[in-house]
Length: 174
Picture 1 (cartoon, rainbow, N blue to C red):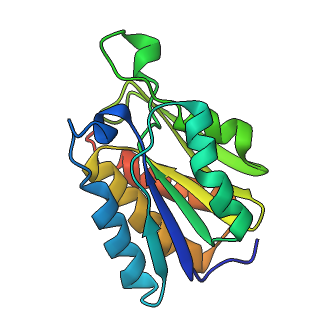
Picture 2: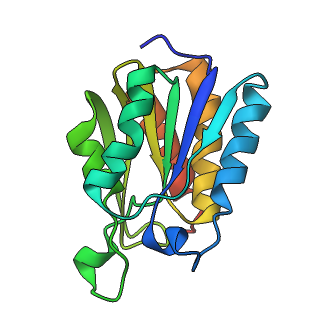
């Protein structure tokens, strides 16, 4: 992949708690700020939040990937909370991306962050680079910063994924 410049980006906040307004989306503005700091001429679109539903998540991104947007950023849904406790929300972004992406690299974090489990994914669909960020603000901010800093040096999916993983893990003491 030879993508080190982002001219167009799509931000997709996910989660029933974001969609319903129970939780305020503070991640999207931060992701936008970090992208514009690195790529000042980037045209960024943020769509309304998408529910925790695998088909809806894929449908939300499909049109944009077909149009050739450079970067699609999913925010949230990287955990698997409901798989461990019925009191936790359902997260499907990671499983939707696992089935939808053409090429992908993922890294699972177990118990190192504020989650019981987190699955970060970098991949491609058509000409678009696709990433997912965890929902907690400090994790999302760390991951997007690591992504843009690594993209210029090494746009390889594995390098991007490892940089994002290291940034998320570094937010929590060992």
